[in-house]
Image (cartoon, rainbow, N blue to C red):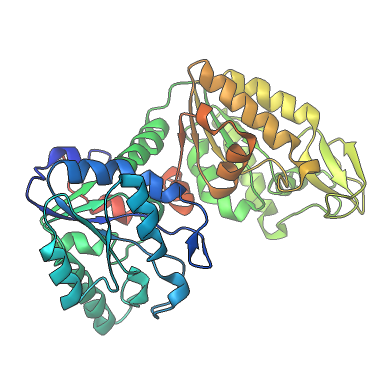
Amino acid sequence: MGLNKKTVRDVELKGKRVVMRVDFNVPVKDGKVKDDTRIKGAVPSIKYILDKGASLVLLSHLGRPDGEVKPEFSLKPTVDVLSKLIGKPVQFVDDCIGEKAVAAANALKPGEIMICENTRFHKEEDMKAKTDEDKAKTADFAKELAKLGEIYVNDAFGTAHRSHGSTAKICKYIPVSVAGFLMEKEIQYLGQTVENPKRPFVAIIGGAKVSDKLEVLKSLISKCDSLLIGGGMAYTFLKAQGHSIGKSLCEEDLVETAKQILSDAKAKKVNFMLPVDNLAADKFDNGAQIKTVGNDIPDGWMALDVGPKTAAAYSAEIMKARTIVWNGPMGCFEMPNFAKSTLAVCKSVAEATGKGAISVIGGGDSVAAVNQSGLAGKMSHISTGGGASLEFLEGKKLPGVEALNDM
């Protein structure tokens, strides 16, 4: 993975006009931003660029407007939020390309900042260009975006796995393309942690489906010492081992694949841990009847969380780790009765981190679980990119990272 990318620290910014891709894809309701975490994440790069005497144009998408101008997906509500966070006025332009946007960008003085309207109001931003005509359209759109600045900074890791106009294609038309601080931190933690882990390296993979995590599992088996499996995906593996799983989640078409993964893990001497007990429920409901059962789930019952013995065994394994990667919860943690093991894992990861392990949390649900537990501050790194962090762990090249200038 190309980890030696230039960052904003490596370029002269004074008197320059910088166009930066941020991830302001925030929840907006009734014209108000409901969660400003992503906006806060971009503040260090924004302040640094402005303090160095550059002017700054911000690009972002919000939601999926599918190439149409839809007021509910406007970035306008982010303007006041950012202005308060940086203590400066922020201008807003109701487009991201065209004469008006370029004129506004050119008029910025050093230390001034503006936000452009949602890049996805133009279908060329994220369209799958199959024909030559469509490829030309997407290239033209990226060229238009490039007119907004002389230096391009990408600080939006959450969209780095997409080859969109504002995340990758723009780099062809701007001579200098570098990473912002948020992007740098993601590349550093996700890349270097997985490429050169301190050992023992423990990976905790949960979530509903094996199919979502198949590539990650294959990639991690050749890198980690222990692999701890939780969530709905565990029952496809238990079925592959010949256990009865009742009404638990199972991807029948992946049972053979699960067998192959188990034998690969054995061949590579990876400690592949599966639940030894489970919380079984008679229905998918927080108020369901619950009983703790072993590896075999009774007919008519479904496992909705791994059991206390499993949580204890996983916690003991986590405490030995020097490097921990966690992606996906252990059970249906959004229901309090099935959140216990995810919380136990959370506490162990925090404790191991306190003793010097490096912990990287990626993927929406595990990030939500960590935030819910109140232990977020005790982890080494919480990734901002769900799909991007997953693809990074799979060892895939991310277009938004690859397009940046090398050192």
